[in-house]
Amino acid sequence: MAASALLLVAAPLLLILHLLPPPQTAAPARSSHATRVFSVADYGAAGDGSRYDTAAIQAAINACGAAGGGRVLLPAPGDYLTATVHLRSGVLLDVAPGARLLGGTRQQDYPPESRRWYVVLAENTTGAGVIGGGEINGQGGAFVITPNAQKNVMVSWNATGDCEGDECRPRLVGFLDSKDVRIHDITLNQPAYWCLHLVRCDNSVIRNVSIIGDFDTPNNDGIDIEDSNNTIITDCHIDTGDDAICPKSSTGPVYNLTVTNCWIRTKSCAIKFGSASVFNFERLLFDNITIVDSHRGLGMQIRDGGNVSDVVFSNIKMRTRYYHPSWWGRAEPIYITTCPRHPGYKEGTISDVRFINISSVSENGVFLAGSRHGLLRNIKFKNVDLTYKRWTNYTGGLYDYRPGCQEMVKHRTGGMMLEHISGLEIDNVRMRWSKGSLKGWDVNPLLFRPSTIDGLSFHDWQSVDVQ
Image (cartoon, rainbow, N blue to C red; front, side, top):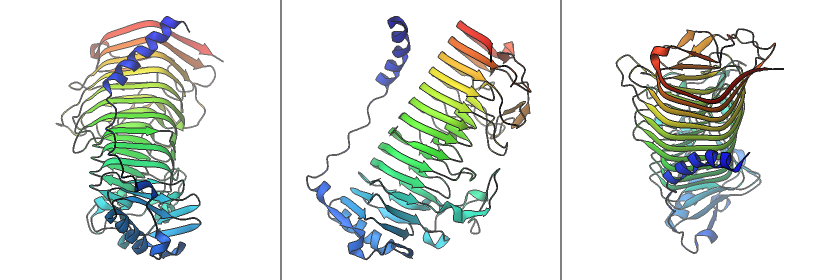
């Protein structure tokens, strides 16, 4: 590629990176912090996987916090069965390689309020975290009532009415209203529900984390970043049934999120904004990400009136395919939507979103759908290679607006479906159609109603058949 072309590609990235202020620097630890180690074995933990070690683990955490912080060590080998443990400020839970922290499978193992159902919970902490190279395991298989290759039927702890439906299950690791969160070098395995959850947190770093969820279990999201700001996620491996990386805004905005160098597989959406979207999403960057065999690649489900702006997706390779339609998604590589969850709800807008250096092999086309009062504005595709082919036997010909809106809609399938857009720039975009494997497709590069689109710009765009 010529130097001038490289500069054109890099310029938008440099602009967004300039707009993304670095996360605040964590407060310096005391000089003795790193040497202070509190082993749970010294507090009576058995580590045999059958007796509960909750009291020993919590005693070590409390002692560590009272001493000003340090590491609480779960030594190897050992399987440490526990009810909810509560981290304290300055405490790093250090699960050694070869050690496992096992979440309890009884409702009595968790606090009375469902919002606090986590195996590891930090509330109002500064400088707390999880490290060590070992594993935290939610024993998600114990919550499956009926295994099903389409979608498992799960336990529901909703008898008290504290939560509703089939999502009444404990999460794995949660940080609520906390600062300077550090989650490094850990495996989070088999969550019963959401795996890693940040709520109203600031200045968090998630690095070298492996997340493994049952591929047939619903709602076992990988990382949910809710109302949290100045967050870095890097070098993570996420293989799970539901959404993998999921910014949400319920009680406040989400801004300054950077995600880099990650590998993702999911039966739902690899990167999904929403659908909780009451407040705004601003200045988010996703770079150098590989997405394989996922039901949807890059998605936005804006349903509650919040707005999205200043987002870059760059250097992303993906392969998206159909799964059973009980899972949201229709194999779209890119899915950007805003519409009201219910009639009368406010409609949010999505603006200044850039897709740069993207390649995909997909069973469905790109889906860009604003709404009458919630337009998509200033959307740019640059250096994008889209290959379309079919290899599963699931039925196509449907657009998926869930949740809410129009739900599932029968429709012709094309390379890009566009509606309610003001400003779409397509620069150096290739659509490649695989001959002989496009059953059910209307081999049409663009499907749109002209009355809903303005400001459409093409430069160096091709649509070709390939073997």
